[in-house]
Length: 273
Figure 1: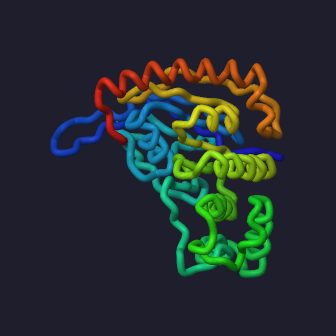
Figure 2: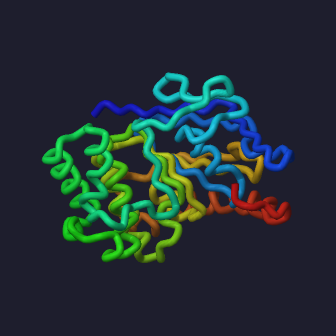
């Protein structure tokens, strides 16, 4: 399998100017994310994680620095990025159309963009639903299924477009612990099969280490990279991994780095950015 989706973030800087007050959200933030890598970003609330994700997605321009995708300039101060089908975002809050079935939600994008004919879109959607453990709900409406199922369906809807980069902004934040573990396992299954580059934001350290190839720990705002942890744990992964010494060692290292920044953020009274 030939992988694409390499992201190179070089000295990314973002200044917001609400009501005339300059707010530095990102400060010379740099990352090198390999094609097909599952990168997870953790850090205090308001540190700038979502700001960085939005810059990669093309929702806003940088104030300074550059972002490259597969060696091509994606965003800079002179070239604002634009959203594209090569980068798909799954947000914290649900975005399924309540008047469409789960199957219709998943096929909506490629049919509207005429990327797949109806038969091919349906076949691909059913394949993704099976991979995500949702084969039995294709004809149900979003209001008829659980929140965990809706979250998995949104990931299936993103993956039907075969993006180079899957951008996930705390997609499982509202799920209870048991539902979250199920969602993790199915996300890893679809990742192992298709290997998009994943940029995943979370506050959950166990989630970060269990899913990631690499964890980026951010400083409190203005955000820059404090520590990068390579998660050299074998794949495919299951929850027996949580009891391993290697996992516990990584979790403790991650916890200590995040705790220091969280205390700084708490003292500063940071709010979500």
